[in-house]
Length: 297
Image (cartoon, rainbow, N blue to C red; front, side, top):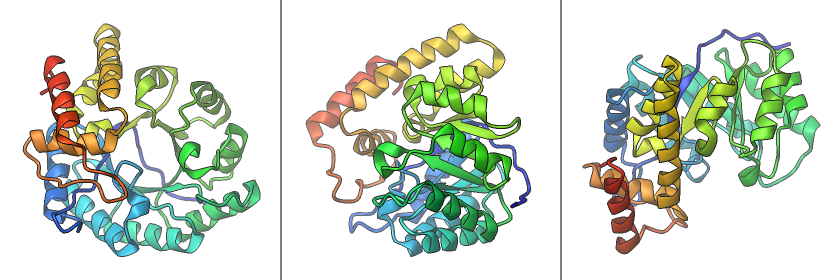
């Protein structure tokens, strides 16, 4: 049984984009500015190197430097959960150890992706990561990307034996999330990663929301989470409705659109790394116009 120190993780965590310069290199100065911007808008934590942050598309060296930059810029003002998951266990362990050394509050790991090694192998993957660090480990479930779905009974088993202390669930399956909330022990952290039902997940018992959209529009998501916490459900529901309108505006290229929105807000974050395409000017202008119509810019 793995025993690790606990850490309070909850509220709004921003799944932060990774900015690039014109040569396609990670722009660490801009990254630090983005972290400070997020803190100024009241977010509770930063989640770098996730799906929105293009973590699987960064080299191990880049991911280590991103983790160091984010932790340093956060300066203890907000919690940092570094996503360390890779296709193989060895690289995941390497990044997890580095994140702990850099000062991260916790790490999260994707299920190994591309291959489908089976539940037993995935369980051992998380055991290996947990044994390598003394900070909390969250599983990161996004089966539409990884091809491996962590079902509630498996999560509950790893939670009960102390392998993982939480999960970021981006399954886009509200019924599965409800089953998960009923299966895990008290105190286990369940962060929802699906913005479309972000409010309702928290109302159902989730610890908070990890939001990619908050990279570009932290105020909107912070207002929703804060209103729910205060019991101001009317304001929270209106914010959730606005989130749904934003999701419509950024389809079908949400990550590229976040870069365009941030450029409008004064952050030169470049463009997402290929094979992602830069958002064309017409689509960017349409999204910006829509957001201004919603009073968000």
